[in-house]
Image 1: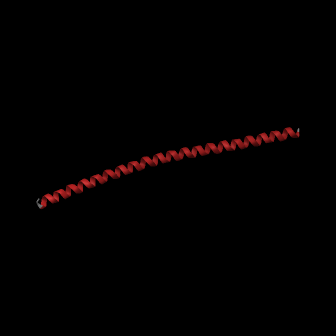
Image 2: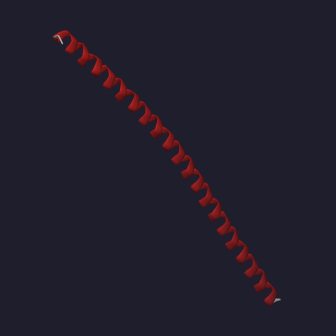
Image 3: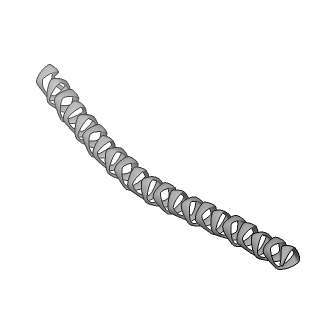
Length: 77
C-alpha cells in the first residue's frame, strides 16, 4: 500500500469516528433532555400531591376544631 492510501484510510477512519462521536453526543443529549423532562413532570406531580395532602390535613384540623368548638358550646348550654 502506498503512502497516499494510508493517508486516505486514516482520513476516512477519522471522519467515521468523528461522525459516530457526533451521533452519540446527539443521542446522549436527547436522552438527557427526555429524562430531565420526565423527572420535572414527576417532581411537579409529587409537589401537587403534597399540596393536596397538606390541604386535606389542614381541612381535617379545621373540621376537628370546629367540632370541638360545637361540643364545648353544647356543653356550656
